[in-house]
Amino acid sequence: MKLTITEVAEVAEVIAAIGVIISLIYLGYEIRQNTVAVRSTAYQAIHDAEDQFWSDLISQPGVADLWRRGLDVGLEDLTAEERARFTVIARRLIYLYQNVHYQNRKGVVDKELWSAWVASLDEFLAYRGFRDVLDEARPHLSEPFNMLVTDRLNTLSG
Image 1 (tube, rainbow, N blue to C red):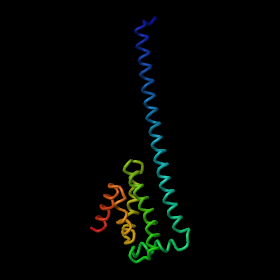
Image 2: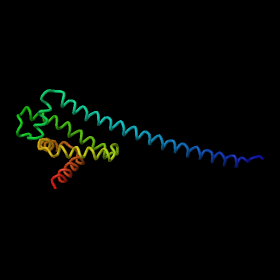
Image 3: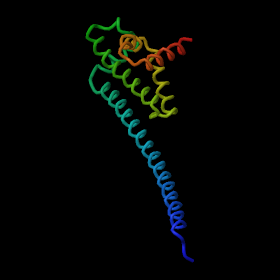
């Protein structure tokens, strides 16, 4: 059986269409795999930053004590030097929370992990010293993060 040029062209079109479909399926798979890799990398970076925060906190004599006292008593009951040191430490943590919030808004951090971070933020919002530093930092924080903090504070006080 001999095919006409039109029939050969139609077969070629079908084969090309199948090739496009296979390429699109493969592209979708690769994008999905890339998304998983990006999320994993981002979360590992967040974890590393958190780990570094806590390592720095306990690695120097007196810093962990300052952290605990600053959380409990607030800024006004610290010396000027202690206030400056505590503010730097607390701001590092505040900016870490803001980063995780941003990553969550962009879909990089999933809901389960974000819920754990919110629970952790709530724990620190219960401390006077953390709230003192947060109040000073708020003009320098993103509007969406400020809205989250306001919501969490309202939830905790209500």
